[in-house]
Length: 120
Image 1 (cartoon, rainbow, N blue to C red):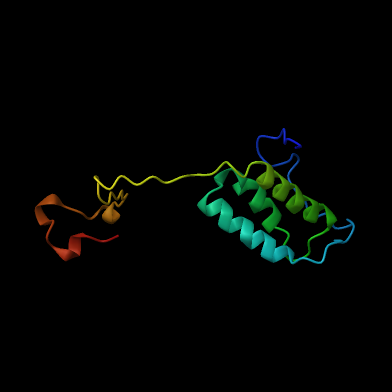
Image 2 (cartoon, rainbow, N blue to C red):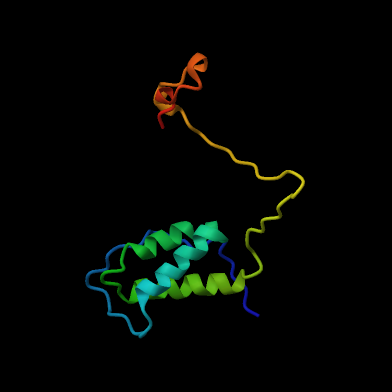
């Protein structure tokens, strides 16, 4: 089995438009592949976020170099398929929620029950 020595699939330098680049060879839908990768990076594979963002920039007119980047990202995911985020809920804690709300600076403890003071 071939191993992937790259820690993340982002390559340097970052992608460019490649106006004079060769046209794509494959027949698969580039935009659909980017959409699937976006789903993965948002749910279980945050380390591919930058690479997915870079490939998504060229959905209107992808060239062979962009297609190759999608293929490299696919190979990376294949070789790291055992890595993911696992959520293990602790049912004894119930639902915990963290919120960062400033109420637009209008919250006053003395008037906490007044609906006019709780703007978000």
